[in-house]
Amino acid sequence: MSKIARALIGGNWKCNGTKAQIASMMDVLNAAGPFSANSEVVIAGPSIHLHNMLKNFRPDIATCAEDVGFKKGYGAMTGEISAEMLVDYGINWTLTGHSERRVGFGYPGETSHVVGVKTKNAIDAGMSVMACIGEHLNDRQTGNTMSVCAQQLEALKRALVAKDWKKVVIAYEPVWAIGTGVVATPEQAQETHRQIRDWLANNVSHDVAKETRILYGGSVTASNCKALYAMPDINGFLVGGAALKPEFVDIINCTK
Ligand code: PEP
Image (cartoon, rainbow, N blue to C red; front, side, top):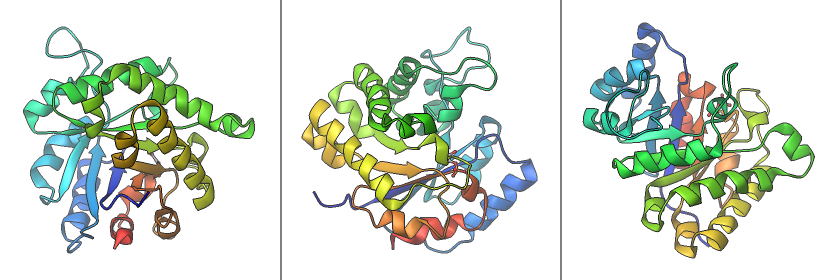
């Protein structure tokens, strides 16, 4: 199977950035010159900064929410931001199932069922989704990487209908590599990406397996991105820490 032509380079700013820091990172990206034509660039930011990002990013950077509501529409859902509300605002991308949301922040995190429902809500409202999956270190050490990923993919499959997969990008993010500086080797990442693509072929369809972009996330930097991108089943990245630094431009352009 030949490599999918257009990569997606995603940034995830998480809960980072004062107004001044966000403005300065936006200035860096806006002034960076033409991006690689092979990269679609999508940056997820904290809700409070989404309006600014949407208004002030150059047109070839899409603004993405970091999460989306569990219920559809508007109403008595204090603290939630629904997919419909994001779309009404002009935001057409969201992350779902980031490992930090799955783990929680001192309170119970999101189950794969919740991630599936959120993903479906976003797609029904017209959004595209970077759906995050990935195993913890003990899962990898006990040989359970793919069974964990398969369980997370299964919940997406249960929530989605066939046509929805056109709006899905899978972000494979081994939890042990996120924010740790310990990046998966290109071979480790490729092996799991291949297994995820095989899972899609066997459980969803061959077309979905062929067309779905599978991103790698976990301590991607300007110095390791080229070797990772050279792998046939790596179709881009979801980048945390390095997306807050000027080196993110080099990651965007590693697909040239
Ligand atoms: C992430 O948060 O999605 C991520 C991959 O973070 P980092 O690049 O910092 O490991």
